[in-house]
Every structure is written in structure tokens, then in C-alpha cells.
Amino acid sequence: MITLNKLTKSFGARTLWEDLDLSVEPGRMLALVGASGSGKTTLLNCMGLLERPSGGSVRFRDTDVTRLGPGGQRRFRRDHLGYLFQDYALIENATVKANLDVAARRGDRSDTAEALERVGLGGREKEKVHHLSGGEQQRVALARLIVKRPSLVLADEPTGALDHANGAMVVDVLRRMSREGRAVVIATHDDAVRDACDVAFDVSTLRMFSPH
Image (cartoon, rainbow, N blue to C red; front, side, top):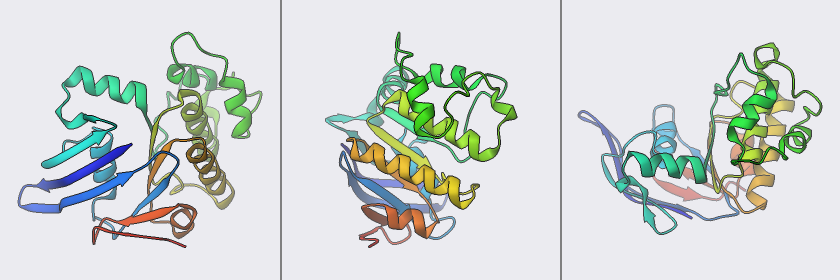
């Protein structure tokens, strides 16, 4: 699904990691772990083409996406990538439904109600996002992912600002998405999130291990 080959990322004289090799298959959930400042979010952003690596390649299926031009990168993010940000990245002055419609495939708005039911927000399509709590906003962001149906899901500390119940719900939805055939990658410092994943990758040591 997605393969990183000899990936390197530097900021000036500081190198976060180099010659990093990693692959994530469909139906698998991978945790990115490591010390604060080790580059978990940066690695996630390189996978999603939000940041450019200093060296190496990111291949999605048979395409080296790091070599795509701006238009190709936009199409990759539009057609294949779903991102779950810690700050939710919602349109706050719009309704819940409007936020989900942005992610829906062209001409298809039929999944909105079902997605909201899956995250416990059934019947709340008309509410404005800025009236919702942080946990409810993360649920909207999750419903947006469900509606988009991406092949690859990247989640950056998705439970970092949530209470236990909302955090558990986020992990459960991401787990279900991986079982439906998505590749799911989660940058996290939460041991419970790490332990819910199939495998973990320590960005500090470039070591893969089983969290179980």
C-alpha cells in the first residue's frame, strides 16, 4: 500500500531520521511512537505529502508520490488520503452536514447520516460545529473520514485532547476502518492507542515491534 524507502528528513544541521524504511499494508493499523521531538508528526506529514522529505521516496501502490507535481499531489490527497488532525481541522462556522459533504465523493451525499450514527452523532446534521464540544468535533472529523472512504488514513495524536470515552471511540472507529481494508497510521504517545494497533514503529530507533 504505502512504502517508505531510505527516507531522510533534516532541518538545517539537525537530522530527525535517515535511511528510514517502512511499509504499511491494507487492513493493518500501525502506531508511530517515540520520544517527544523524534519526528512522529513530521513522518506522518511526509507520508501525506504535507512536508517534503530531504531524501528517499514515498511510494503509494506503484507510484512514487514524492515525484508528483502539485496537481498530482492534490489528486493523491483528494482520492486516496484521509487525515485526522489533533485540532480537528473543521469548518467551525458551518454545519456538521456541510463539513461531511466537503469530504463526500462527487455526487454522493448518501453516507452522511450513517457516518454520524457510527460516531454517536445521529440526527445532529444541522448543528453548527462551533457549538460542539472538543470530543464531539473529533467525532465529526471521524465521520468525515468515514464518508470520504480513503485508502490510507493518517491520524496525528487523535486522542491527545480527549477524555477516555471519546478516545476509546476514536480508536474503535479507526480499528473498524482498518478491518474494512484501509491502511491506518497513527502518531501517538498514548500506550492504549499503541496497544490497539497491529504493530508499532519507534521513530527514535527506527525499530518495528509488536505492541502486544
